[in-house]
Figure 1 (spheres, helix red, strand yellow):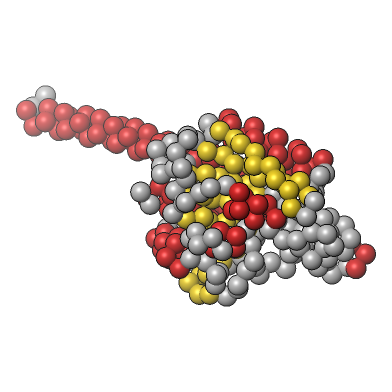
Figure 2 (figure 1 turned 180 degrees about the vertical axis):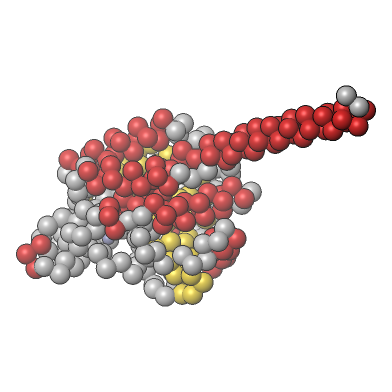
Amino acid sequence: MTKRSVIIYLSLIFALLALVAGWYIASFLNREADSVSFDSSRAYADVQTQVAFGPRIPGSTGHAQVQEWMRAELESAGWQVEVHESERLGHPIFNIIAKRNAEPPQIILGAHYDTRMIADHDPDPAKQTEPVPGANDGASGVAILLELARSLPVDTVPVWLVFFDTEDNGRIEGWDWILGSRAFAEEIPINPRAVVIVDMIGDADLNIYLEKNSNVAIRTEIWNTAASLGYDNVFINEEKYSMLDDHTPFLEKNIPAVDIIDFDYPYWHTTQDTPDKVSAESLHAVGDTLWHWVVNGQ
Ligand SMILES: [Zn+2]
């Protein structure tokens, strides 16, 4: 070998080593990102699991099953689960609270886990007394919270995940909307920086407009986070609806609260609110946005 060919030979070996090292580091970084980021296929499976329990009407078998399942999922993700029991209009209420430690929460993320007992918006009058399957209206918000429980790093600001009961039976004799969140806001002493509700955020055709009653500073933070991640086609920077939802009781107590909701859902309160109307991509846009908003907001 000439001196020149030795140099070529050595530099080829060096280049090959650099390539292997680079590939190894890249795959390691990818694995790191995968292990901590929001996994929308798991979230979509959570929607299917909930709908498979049947309707989650307060007092039903499906309602009891979803409670037990949420507890198991949260505990296996390392969260402590407490049940806030109360009663409104004679109906028992079981709000499920998940926390990682005893610190007071700076952020509360909430979703309702119950489903509406009647599909009174169904286009077929014969189906208007049937229950709502609640794939989007109920299961999608719970799925987001459960996947955040699995994927949020342990060292974020103190977060509570709250699964509200008895949200969805308004305009039915003897019931009202948002009974669970109202009981929670009235009975649990909290002073968080923000309460963020997710409701009906799984629609495959997802368009989330700014909700008019929501706290402006917090909703701006969340919409900015979404835009920075490329979800500005989903989080539309315009106001549209004014909602009565689980954020309302917190706003009434002057706690900054935001409702993340896509109210343009043709299957709302119908028997057609089934998992095929929900997509993993939509769950990902919302879950990924909230993941980054929580992780970066400290
Ligand atoms: Zn509803």
